[in-house]
Image (cartoon, rainbow, N blue to C red; front, side):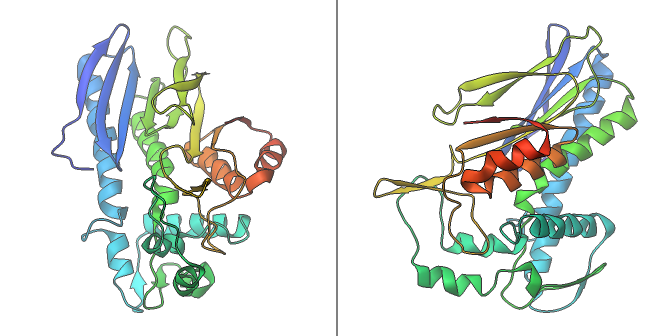
Length: 298
């Protein structure tokens, strides 16, 4: 997230590789046949956009829009068009998930810490926090937003996919038609095929072996998004608790796949489907089959 951690650009055979860190994730940009100066311009634009979005929407920064909203203590706020679009999208996801997805559920992290440990909160702890959860408790009439005192929002569930698509838009403006693979922590987008028609090769991380690829997907155009619990979970008394919470109950979704990857036209679309499928638990594949997209489960 820190722009002082500069992005690096190196040459690899017939393409350029850019790397940086943003949104607590390793980010990679693969740029097909292009002059070095253009490749650097593209990497600078993509990394700057990723850092901009993180600065604006990170719940961890005291100077972010999200922090100002969360500290508003019941006061009405005016938000800009970009933030309003994200709020509208979050409201749509809440409706589609019948309340299981909710950007106000971030307060539940006060009870849950998904660090591989064994601490499980009590029902009483969750019940108290759930009083501050629920999109229906928010007053939202674009561009006016009002949260009840004690409530918070968190764009973590949709921000990275939005950033990928926004970065892809920038590349299209700089170099229309250029093939560029953008990968922010496993959320990926490609707008155009490569000059030699070779696909980009994208590894899907194994849910059981961190750092190993369970599958390699060949991608010429489109996007991939992955959701899973291989890195964030609680394990207690023989039971594994996923970090994916049902906002209606405060408890992790049960019987969901360990990992879902979806291919779609945009990263936002792919991320939407992975999220909605995960929240379906054992019925995840039913939703994915009905959507008609390509997907992989682990």
